[in-house]
Image 1 (spheres, helix red, strand yellow):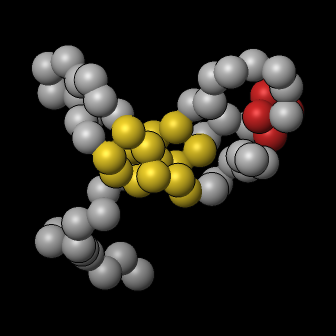
Image 2 (cartoon, rainbow, N blue to C red; image 1 turned 180 degrees about the vertical axis):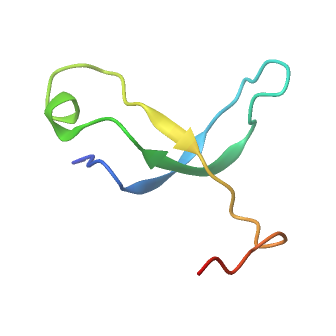
Length: 59
């Protein structure tokens, strides 16, 4: 699997502590591609929501 910065993947964020996101949700890859192409077994992602409940139109 080729992981690239800016890609969105379904990520299982379990187990969670306190107010951390939990369960399966979309995650945005924020780690740069040089590290993504390295032999590290870690990828930095940000949990994002799949809920459109509070969608805002920002000009």
